[in-house]
Image (tube, rainbow, N blue to C red; front, side, top):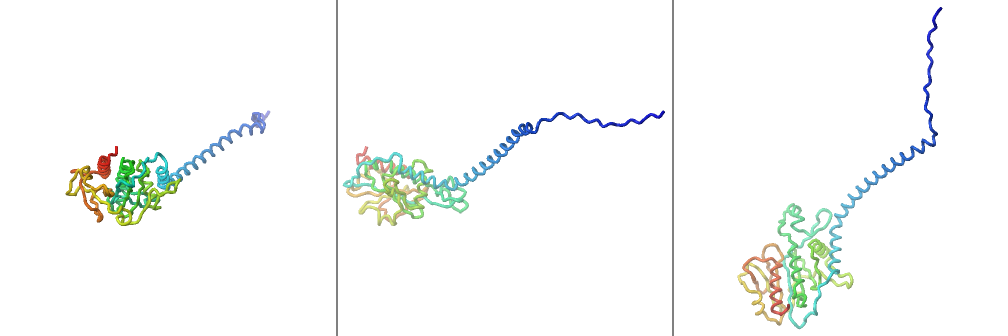
Length: 299
């Protein structure tokens, strides 16, 4: 008897029961939503990074303009200097700051007031000496003049500043100069570009560029012009010297606002040295104001 061959039978694998399609969709929806949210959040993060980079570039371009605007508000706002009524009958003083290092140049995409700290590389590339660019000297000198008791007593008639390039501008005695150098640089940038800075409320020109020469258009008639230099051979005690000056006319004091060198002006009557040592412009002005306050009994 022949043995029959075994016939292979394909056994179907038992398939696990499947859930309904609706239940599968319900389970898959939260996963899809999570993926979409992750993609959207990554896109938003990339957009924020690019927008911040663009804003940073824009902020660099408008930094000087914003600083100038804030500084202009600082002049008008804040606590103004309280001045007594100007004494027209009594003589006063006029301060002139010569050779002030105030120069504007385009650095990158913006115009800035050049100084030795922030623009040393720029100045060297243009074959200039960074030590000559010291606008902080003018800032300190103006603060010393406007904060003095002579100004608060109403005996300060005017303040003039002439830059190294020959630009002449007037500073009103009741102006409140910004205390920080950054705001002062913004003010000078705005002044040298627009030629004047006006008060917001009254429209009065607090700082304005005026016409040269100073001795012809702005200095008081018959006034005595005194210049100061360490190289002068005439060494005097400032208080005693002022006692010999006539009190009937106004006095003009000319001080150099540069880092080094000597002022050379044709309108100066005499040059004085008030110390055996070199003095900064701010300290020289403080000595002058102290001697004036003592002679005029301003306490």
